Image (cartoon, rainbow, N blue to C red; front, side, top):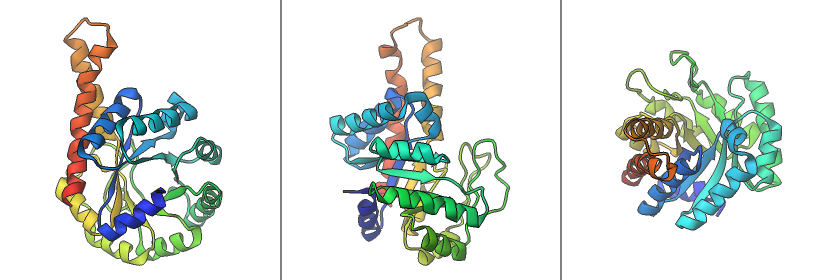
Length: 273
């Protein structure tokens, strides 16, 4: 089943997919064990930074082998790419889905760039995600106005033909300084205006009930990345301070275990929506 087909199924069911970034074998293992333990599908995501770290072929091979080994239904997605060449390289490596992020460009440029990626991805039968509006990235202000406008979203989807659209409704990438409050009424209006899957970026730290209500109002993909890095590294630091053991095969598992528990909690939110 393609990711596009899965989104169609989720639309009928009123459900969503969890999309989690992985950075190395240990974080990938944690995500897959969590999904396997709950018999739930998952989207495995790599950012351009992870591609630069692991390499495209290695990242794709790890993800495919992991999904098969753990019996998990899943898809491989390139997150927040800005390079046409990287997107094409990932598609050549067998990625199921790619995101072109031209959200900080003017609307017309975002449309033009996104449409070119959609045209490319069609030849691979791959899913294409884009972003419209301002979802603060790491280091950027969370106060900047720029929520997605329903009329612009409708026109953007019409002109680009994207399969999925990340919307700005009050979430942000990275850590929140105070509890986020999603504009769920705006989400409902956007959902009614467009004919594609809606994506929530910045899922780390958003209260469970807001996530569940977001799903009920049209979110079909929820991204989680920051919390995975944070809990893995926080646990690993504690382990390293508490031992002189140099066997990474014994030092890493506690950190991986925390990733498992975190992803299980996130999957439970979707299951209960």
